[in-house]
Image 1: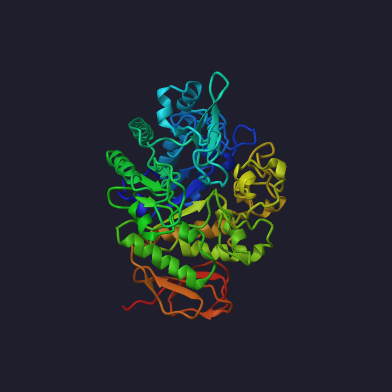
Image 2: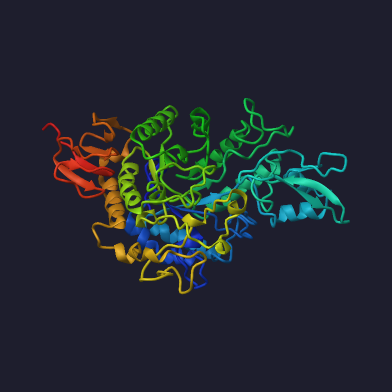
Length: 535
């Protein structure tokens, strides 16, 4: 099935996030690669997804899992070649799947040619492309600011001049290997607009923008003080960049810009989705929401209201490469997620978490807007919290004591023991032996499996007319129950209470996340219904 010419495909697409290092390894080095993805496109086609979002695949020293990019116009040799990436785009399109790639505009790798030139010569013009500043204090040995980085820790590193003397400091909101770019400089803006064109010319359908709100910094380098403009979060100047990017995207047919925007203020979040800026943005409010009926309904209402006001599509995300997998989150007493609240090692009821994750799948796939599926959630994978410390690679671990590697473990495809068909050798991160029941092979054809639930739900979603518009109406429901209609004949009912509840009048049950008890919907279970309509 070739890719269609559907306009605004991003408004209700099912988008599957591929973490290339952990999807499938073709060359037997324990690291996933592009040819591995090409070989497994059939899995994504059978799943029924509309698009793939690729986490960064560019040349990188991998100080931060590829988010430290040395060259945005090539592919890291660990993943393959540019020709292989172009072949993947072509083959995905032939299978009816669009391609979204990651662009990281806030910073580059310290191995980027610009930064290497800036370090080699204090007078180099490339210094203006970054944030080099003299230090404070009589000897300049104090950091220019006391800003705390996105991974916690300091945000400045001092350089050494060619003669061996201490030099200026440079800013990095993430690791020292990720120097921040100076978006006040026109060369930076021009470079990234050209990068967009480079990939759009190769058939990429969308751009996911990492850390989209961080680009600009207050040139006065003020302290971070509550109640005033933050020195580097969500500065107004960032919107000029995305207006320019939108003009680039609009010069190609059916291209989309999708922002990673962590923003607690709904109105500020909505600014990124104005008609001349980004097409969509990730809904982190939903991702971190607790398994609580009141909070979940408030989150859904808040999300739909904010997006409707500006005509933008909502997005629904349960997991990604940065957060604890939701099977694990939903199996804890504390079901929310926060980078500041490290719950590693807190007891998990995986049976409960899996039951809730199955119900959450039917919820997220039936709400108005686009749904994102993180690789492995269709298999019901949980967070691997038993990775030996010496195998952890996430730089966040040393700064926050929490590693994101547990959600980045290679996928299990087949067999009874690791590496479960991911590779012919041990993967770059260890897989739990208990995943032998979570492989694609083990779940295929099992009507009770998570994989077959996702395949059925995505297939029904594609065929259901009511799930492709923005209409949604809440139904009266018992306490602790969320129930709503999409279109005249479709309803979703989710029981988040502790007792079974009676189903509303209906003609047919389309799909249930777990077995029902006659006309009773058990706790932590969702069902899609065909309602009775007047003839």
